Amino acid sequence: MKIRSLISIAIVLFSVTSFPGCKELATVRISNLTCEFLTSPQGIDETGSRLSWQLRSDIRGQKQTAYRLLVASSPEMLAKDQGDYWDSGIIESDQSRLVEYKGKTLQSREECFWKVMVWDREGIPSAWSEPAFWSMGLLEKEDWTARWIGSPDSVTAPYYRHSFYLDDMPERATVYLASLGYFELYINGEKLGNEVLAPAVSNYSRRSYYQTYDATTYLKKGKNSIGVWMGTGWYTPGLPALHRYLLSSWTIQPLWLILEPTLPVC
Image (tube, rainbow, N blue to C red; front, side, top):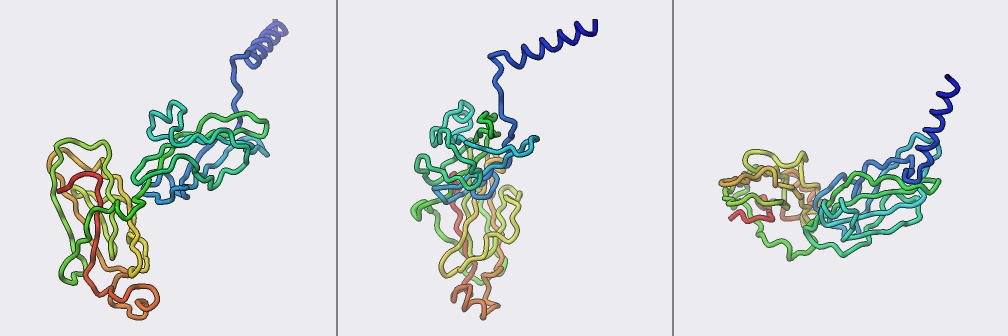
């Protein structure tokens, strides 16, 4: 009886593993998808954004021999395995770091949803990775339609606040914010982002970096309020030696900011 049972089990296992309908998948798994070293970043201003992923396997010496990237304009399109922005096709390469996007020319504010699959050392394809995301920032000067605002007095920590109404909830709302000095952005009393001392330090006589925020979940139907709290930081008249080498000669001016939303706040 034991011999018959063992033979039966062996036959069943052979039938399952050799059945033509069973598709073998690679033993590698894909994780940690990033764009420009960031996880699902917003406001990327590189049209040739660089994509990366990591491989995991329980088999020693396993490796990637090819990959295929899909970049789509929506999660629904990506779920259908359609890359209307870019379908790289099968690329024979072991590169999994900083693969440059080479699809449709991307425009300001466009959203990109992407995923990747790879082939292992035996040439067996993996499953698709989990989807990832990045959005484009404001690529042209003309994209900034807002105006710089500031206090007429040299206030060291001004607070700006504005109220506006929404008749309907937007599908997506994004805020782009640049300043001369540090800032914190609030919508309806909640702080957006987890950055401290934003934006990064720059030579204020030449440039000011901007931050991008997804404000969708912070909004509500009806009355909303948006506020910005500012501080001098490195944009300060107290360090004359640094002004000569790092900052501008006009940093004694009041703090300024420019805020560009994708929804009407007037």
